[in-house]
Every structure is written in C-alpha cells, then in structure tokens.
Image (cartoon, rainbow, N blue to C red; front, top):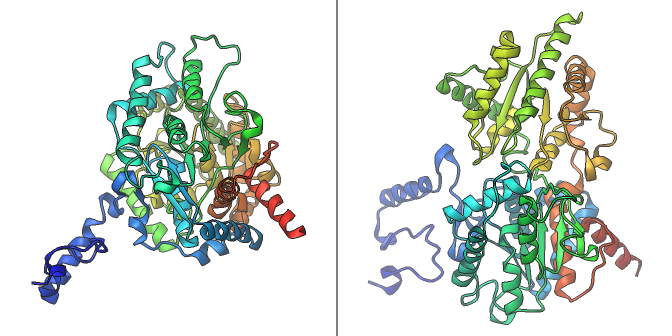
Length: 547
C-alpha cells in the first residue's frame, strides 16, 4: 500500500481523511463516516464545539472551516470611510508580514469573548495574521480570579482578601503556560526572528505577567494591555483595603506594558500607566453573531418555542412567547438584591398606573434574565424575588419570573427582539455591550448608570433613560410612558436598522487594533492626548490624504 494511504500527511487536517484507507472504502461507508464526523462537531443545543488547538490557539469557527460571514457582509455593515480605514491598515500589515497575538484567560462565556471571535473572523476575511491564545484551565486559579473580580467590583464580603499564596499561584500559572506553550519553538512569545509575533496584546488583567515575559525575550516588542476592568476604588481607601491590594498586585505586573487601551476612561488609567500612554476604546457589538443578527420570523418562532418549553420543563410560571408582552431585566454576575427590590417596587407602581389609567391595555410581565455561564446561583436570587412578591405584591406573582437563559445565543436574541423594554442594573464588565445590543435593536432602555462615552451616540435617542439605583418612582414613570406611548415604541422599532455606529461595529473595533499594530510595528510614536483610538486612526488617514 502506498505511503500516503498508510498514514496522514502533514497537510492533512483530519477533517476529510478521517481514517486510513479512505479511498478503499465504499461510497456508503464514506457517507456514514462523514455523517459521524459532522455530528461530532456539535454539542449540546446543536452548538459547534469550541476548538482549542496546539499551544492554546483558539481555532475560531473550527479553524475557519465554518463560514458564517463574508468580507462583503462586513463591508456593507459600515460606511465607506470606515471600511477604507480597516482595508488600508490591513494592507500595510499584510505587506510587511506583521504578526499579532492576543492573550486572554477564556475563549468563551463573557461578552468580550464574542467580540474576539468576531475580530478574528474579520481578520481572516482581510488576510491579516492575528492569532488568539488562551492558557490551560486550572480550577484553583479560576477560583482566585473570580475572587479578585468580586473584590474589584466591590461585591465581595468585607473579610474577603487576596492572599500571597493566591497571588503566587496566579503568577505560577501564567509562567507555566508561557513556558510550555508560548516560548517553545516558533511560539508567539519568542523573538520575531525565531517565529514569534511582532505585537503582543494582553486582553486580561490576570495574564498581565506576560508583559514581563515578552520583554525578557524581545525587549523592543510593543506590548498592549486592553483593560475592560470595572474597578470601584475609594480614593481614601487604606493600604489594607482589599480592592487596593488587588489593584496594586495588577499594577506591579503591568509595569512593563507599553500602552493601555482602556474601554472605560473613568475606571483604570493614570494610576496604572502615565496618561500619555493611555488610549480609549468603545464596547463592540457584532451584527452577525447569534446575539445580534437579524432573525427571520420563522427562526424567532423556533427559539420562542424552545423558551416556552424550558418553562414547562422547570414547572415555573411562564411567559408565553410571543403572545405575552414583557419587560426584560438583565442580571449581572452577582446581582444586587437592593436593585432587584427597586425594580419590583417600580413594577408594582407601573401596574397601579396602568390599572388606574383610562387606557384599555393589559399588564406587561416582568422577566428577570440571567445569561451568565458561571457565577452566582440563580436559585438564591429567585428565592429573594419570591419572598418580595409574597411580602409586597402577591397578586402579581404570576406576572413575574426569573429565568436563566442558556446557549444558544439566538435564544437571547429572540427574547431581546420581543421585549417591550430593557432594564440594566449594573455597570459590571460586559454590560456596555448589552446596552448597545438593546439600543441597536431600538429597544427602550432604562439603566442605572450614566451614559459616559456613549452619550454622544444616543443623545438624540428618546428611548434611553437613566435613573438612580434606588429611584423606583422615576423608573415606574419611564416604564409607564414606554408602555402606553405607542408612538414611542413604534419610533424604536422603525429606528433600529439605523442604530449601528461604525465605532461599535466589528470593523470599527478592528480599525483600533490594525491602526495600533501598523504604527507600533514601524516603531512610530503615537500621542493619545485622551483620544479614542478610532478617532486617532481617522486623523492619521486624513493627514495622509492631505499630503
């Protein structure tokens, strides 16, 4: 038998030649094997398995064998000016063979993970060399990371502190992964002459020790840290304060970072890195992923039936999709019972306003939704809501429910598409993406935090309301206006297709990183001056046009 029939060749990726002697098999045997191979691609909920390759390389879309979107689709999602920016910087990087590596702690679960998948998908369409790496998981380290996140967000218990052992455990985990995966032959953290990359982007604060490792092996290679941390630090906090301890630990590992790309300007900037090295970015929403894409009525009906079935299986009070109208309340990883009580009070007042008004309209239902893949126990929150209902509004119990929405993402898309209004009660990591998801669908949104950098994007949007965390009266009045003002709801539905700004699209997000990579790989100095990277890219291209 020929050698190529005896064993796989180096170019064989294993997706077609699934076993030896493939050509000797009959057509029906080949068909049976291919069916079994296709089935193995999918897991629970018919969702394709996430592929992690050698060295922790994230194989997006099964190494791009799954085709979800084309370059033309991306081009049609933005203005010609933004497309030109992305195309020109990508052409420069391809011409010079610049390689970029992104490091993050997890390939799935958080809103930012979907953004990375979309970025790599777009990069593949452009032909640029951007790769994404994740470390081997370690349960004990994951526990420490979650603990640090709770401390930084101010939702931990007062006696909860990070220990020296946990700090060392985290550092050892990073060094171990770097040594075993990323510093080996042709590893991304090797020098560029030895197969390493030209630009390192650290996309997780708990992998920040990679900055020092990168500098030790290639001192002149630029290292960028992308910060999405929502840190609540009291300026008057003492040295022994738990948040200060975690904050200082992260700072010590970030000393070797060249540039900080910060998503939230008020959260993490000059104390970590001098202001002249800080750039700003916006949250990103991908129009083509399962959470945000436009879905046909047939698809909405399919996932709506799945949602209804989940209620029947759990034996809980149901929202009958799509007949029932409902207000959607999205929960954070660790929701505040106080905020939940405010929403319940506002809902009770809303029902009173509707019942005492002269309008002939039914009561909306209230749906608390959790779509986190890990974190707090939703049962505990459900018990709190049930106790509040029994105490304050027993007659409304059948109108209120708490539901954990699991994958696929299209299920959340379906719920958001039908919601009469959306309430966001958190500013924790990932909630800005969820705010933009609702806004771009034209949904009325009530949030308890200021609009911050998104104020200019929604300043003319009459569907966005801000209230204080404990102001149930204002929340009820906004909900009443949304509910009874059919014109306002119709404005939201008709305006949805136009509510996508280039800065928050996948192409706009790519402009940020392609611009930085293009300039830094040439050794050029960039002065941020408190600007957003996207705006700097526009200014840079305008100067080139003038010349």
